[in-house]
Image 1 (cartoon, rainbow, N blue to C red):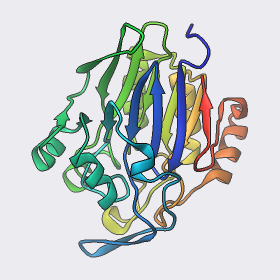
Image 2 (image 1 turned 90 degrees about the horizontal axis):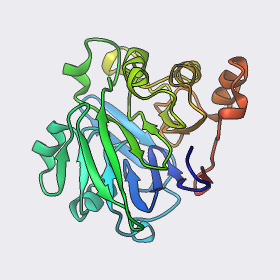
Image 3 (image 1 turned 45 degrees about the horizontal axis):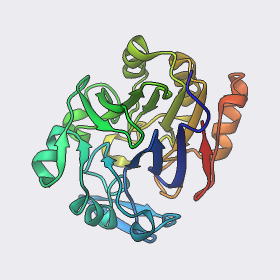
Length: 259
């Protein structure tokens, strides 16, 4: 079992979170822009609130974990500027091709090792994700999730924009019980796939927690964009209905929690 406070999460808003994993600093899906509209083809994504910290306030981190680069609700203009100067960015292979620089595509089940300041290492492993219903990858593009592991550290799952409980089952088969799950859980919907869910709904997030045998769940990507169909209230209701309220750590932008 991990020692107290070996892992902390600071929720920045939207998909973005600042993590300290045994001394390794990690930024998830950087989004720093103020509210505004983002045209994508024939549709528009609307950001309704900015991040709790600026890029300068976050500062340099050891690694950026980017679930995907093709949608502005996971990588906006400010996030792209941040990635351009980052030391290491782990993402999809298609993101590596498009962004170049410090971006490294991390295939499923392949790990990248990071030295911890006090000795030892932490591993980041790429895991499967599907940004919509089965068969949608050719439309929505490639996405990835991540699992963090290390000696005397909790096992942490970061879902990215995954909508597939079957992918969660694949990950659980290798890693359950997961001590902490960071689930992208806004039930995102757009006209792109006739309003099919592109990320987990609240009920699916609660089901994912059960599949993973997660000790705690920190939701991300459930507010601050207009195309999310469910928010914090629905998450609380779904986890209560599943008898998992004590596992839900619902943070406000800027708030932190430790494990």
